[in-house]
Length: 410
Ligand SMILES: [Zn+2]
Ligand SMILES: [Zn+2]
Image (cartoon, rainbow, N blue to C red; front, top):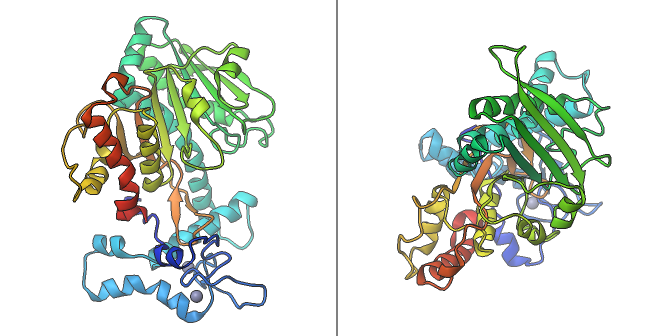
């Protein structure tokens, strides 16, 4: 998993020639040359994984050549992974796992797969579901930006309120409304959060899932925390609510919900054009710690840039500093002010993501793991009194330039 290749397809040459490029490479257009498949056009599919399409055998070969060229150069395994740009044998093998997982997701026991393969696929699917409660509980327990609110709550109300913003039925809630009322998902969150509650002296954790794709019927359940050593002893409870609709102050008021102590965004896509996060972010109180996840490093960089440009976070997370530094190279603005070490923001690989690998819907050679990257910090920690200072304008300019200068983003 450490070597998972992300963002394998380089599309710059195609976009330069066709700036309005809208095709899905490897799906409705050749993965190598970008030629669109009309109904008459001959498209061939990779015989290994059956998940990437080409216009011809020569385009297919070209796409897997990058890796063999590096073999010739006699490079180490790691460099080989880094320089593999196309449909390497590793990529093909990972896409075969994607295929198995989708088959098993649709059909519990497919007849043309042996038991071991079916079980492996089931395990990967389950690990992705479990990544939501595991990430939430473990990152809150350990992340630097959550510690002071945890201490405060333990010494005052003994109740921690966590809002999962933009939650949806088919992700954070494990297809709750399709699963015939099973409470597996609530058991999983309870087990994951028991340790946090018992070790931090919290009596109640309120977990509120809010989003337009939450189940139609709002849920309100309570589960007792239990300790592993003494399963009969009960230490407080987890209160879980779901709320269908956009996250905003009116909606929280309407349902009598208290302000969150911590907010969580699983794969928010702050920069996607389809919807705006402004209202949701504006309704969160200044100083609230947040955790967000993304599927790829690239999306994590974009989300972090968005929050910085909106003045939602003050510091560059140390995990991103190398990217921002890279961008300011060659500009006059190479100074170390506002860089790592200050503040409690972080960006890193998520050790609690699952092992299910998914294929991107727009580039057949791109694969990702859900929630693989985590970004955290304090929302609205940006100090407006410093907004006009030299450092902050430099910081922001560096942040917005980087999208264009960073080779990883192209
Ligand atoms: Zn082609
Ligand atoms: Zn393949």
